[in-house]
Length: 375
Figure 1 (spheres, one colour):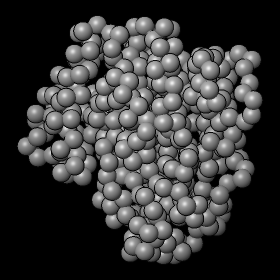
Figure 2 (figure 1 turned 45 degrees about the vertical axis):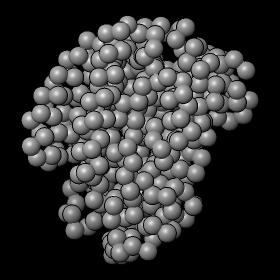
Figure 3 (figure 1 turned 30 degrees about the horizontal axis):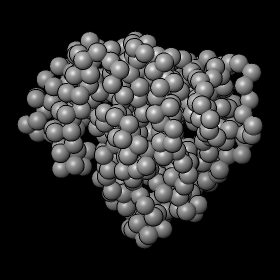
């Protein structure tokens, strides 16, 4: 079947229930900025054989979340990260390199880009798509957007080896993005560890009750969005996607994200773990806790315990995303390098050169630092 690009605001309905369709249609109906307040992008669906992919199209604007703007990932977010981590003598050269690439990536119009299979999460899971029909999909997108780069985020040898091989064979350029932390078998690698037992005891001492939400009230949605914001936006970066209460409602209603919460005796939510699962792999894109409470209450540990326990019980592999490396290693995770794949073959030689230089510099200099320092 020839791939087709579909406007989500039209009348198209898939033959059966489909979360990608329901998600993109829900964003389009409400306006993506109403759901994710720091994202402004064009939304499409792409149908190829039996699969439906979310597609985002950006025309070059600078700023906003990295989930659809690679300049934010490779320049703006990288600069923020450099202020937070200790890389010793490499810091000053790192600042100079980021400043250099900030400029030339703007010149190369890196944000003029079409993202394929983009769920607008910090970690995209590609499920059971192993790159089938990728050349035909690429040709369709390039016919429609001949001046745009094509991109597929969140590729690694652990969660998407088949897709990673497919983009290599189709001539895409792989650019390192970060080191992510994954657990193959939670029952074996996490459950017997002291950290697991300590986290379980912290939950028991807390007096909080754990609940998998079957209904999300207005107050629950606001509280979940606020707890996520406190951690991922307030503490980490405003370039992380800023999810609104409407987003919490949508993703719960369509079954895209399952929300597990820890409630105080008065009913207030003190910690949340939102879990996104595809083809036996789970990642927690929504994690948060009440930062007004003292660290002794271990709310971050409780939030993480909630999604790890659920994944363990369900027999899922865990993609723990990036950050908090030592915390995750103590809970059985190991690091793998994640890439973003870009198709550049149709672009001018100058734009290709910038992207290929970025790929070579990051592979040569950043990847060894990430591996050596566990970043």
